[in-house]
Length: 262
Image 1 (cartoon, rainbow, N blue to C red):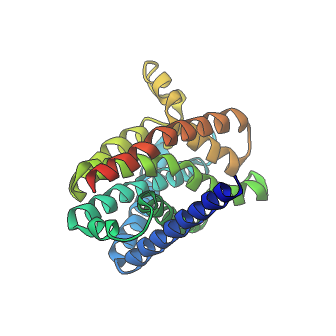
Image 2 (tube, rainbow, N blue to C red):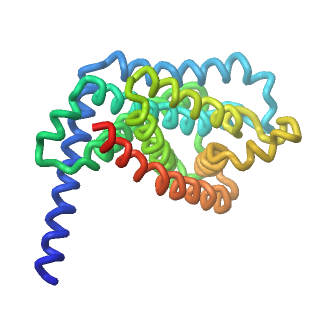
Image 3 (tube, rainbow, N blue to C red):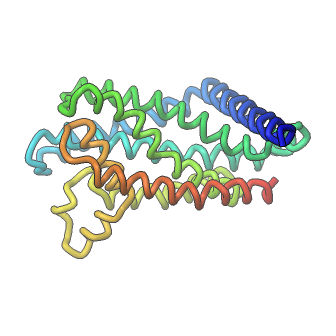
């Protein structure tokens, strides 16, 4: 029994080391592709400026629209950032890099987990940039120091399930272009059918139940409560339930599809 426990610990340590190694490799690739980091940073900044200075005057939220918008933009940014998980994985598969991994004594699951971990680290940097931009144009935290500290970490936590979802699409798609389209077709509608940009109450009556049940709405409402204060328990619990449920479905599917593809 003692030997079995020792073997399991050794295997777990091996998987963790492989995952960290793959995450570091993906971060190095990102630093060598500054145009990618520039694009994923510029896009959300453009959204912020567009909604605040073009649409903001026409959208009534009962307070500062900038304070209302920024949590939604942050959640939207990390979700769009998950698309790179699928695109990067599909690109590795199409270029034959995965064949090299197969010849190495490493855990197959580490390729998926390392990709997710590396992309989450990149997203944390982008969230930091978004907060700096928001503070520059008037965004302020009214929910206390704890909420301000918790917001970026919650945003990254919320994205975990979507990273695995996009990894599944990437392993299944076969090409980076197809993976990019698949991620857009998922993230775009759930972003705009949520409370990210406008209050759900302003939507048509038939659309409100869809928007309220949207996992993005629970994520945005939780982020907004962290930033601005207010009730958080219900939205937080529902968002956690969505995260656990989606991760439980797509993490095994991503690993399975990756093994088939490789």
